[in-house]
Image 1: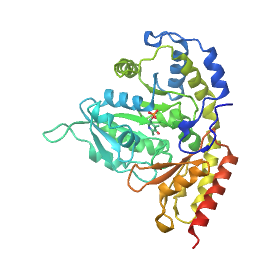
Image 2 (image 1 turned 30 degrees about the vertical axis):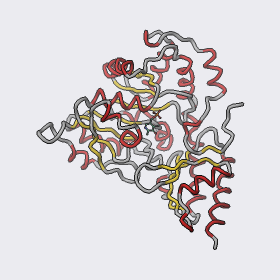
Image 3 (image 1 turned 60 degrees about the horizontal axis):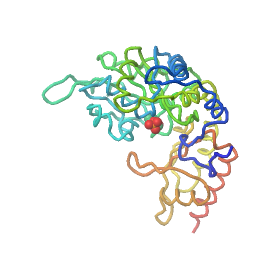
Length: 356
Ligand SMILES: *Cc1c(COP(=O)(O)O)cnc(C)c1O
């Protein structure tokens, strides 16, 4: 394919290009005006997505950020949202929950695996009073991006969500990479989404679609989300050309994620022993490897990123949450051999730099 990435691009699984099958499906897709509800391919994608995560209905949205924002807008209007302190919604969506939905965050401590404590959830819920806005929504993230793609099991999820339900809150799952979690746990995605009123997942990351995410929930919730998507400028017309890729993403690309997880494990095991690298291999559960780096002579994560890039390996420096860390994400467009080559580059760079 002419449009494979030239470098070993481990910055994110969002860099994946649409597959040849997706390109073919785009050219053949039946389309219509989806704002009029007349795009048959979008309709088909929405039906497949809803069924796949066990919800009544689904909405095709341009991005995961818009899907999460719609969920907060609908579930938490004029109220507060319980958010993990290192959640993507809190750290990486421009504060939209507060700025656009009018729902401030009540941050909860996140453990190193992305989990919230059920006791913290119970203790954070409050009614409206002279000091506080009413707590209306709990959001969870699975896999957890800034914890390193960590997985929360169905049992752990149920325990975290239970106190929120008991207190009458709505619940939303930021399941951008829910199929990575399902693959790692060996359970259907629907089992991980079951406790929630709504779930968002991305087609555009490890599933290789060029654009789009799905927001899933009850019929009534999705009808409301459809109206508000239009308000946000997310009403799309002949979006069937994109939805055609989404169908392949769900039907086919969800089946190959274990390969990415194995590649991440290979990287993690090789990097964990290198000088200056601080890597908790227990957090490497899916397609990500996040680690700190402090080398000799003041060399830091930014230095490492630069030197890797000069050798054709692209990594991301995460500013979110304190000390800068390096993130590597495996995906369909980096092979196992690419990862082995990357390990060699890491070894050459770090072993040599640390010797006197
Ligand atoms: C990528 C991501 C999103 C947002 O998706 P976009 O399509 O990039 O807007 C939300 N949550 C998590 C955990 C993500 O990794």
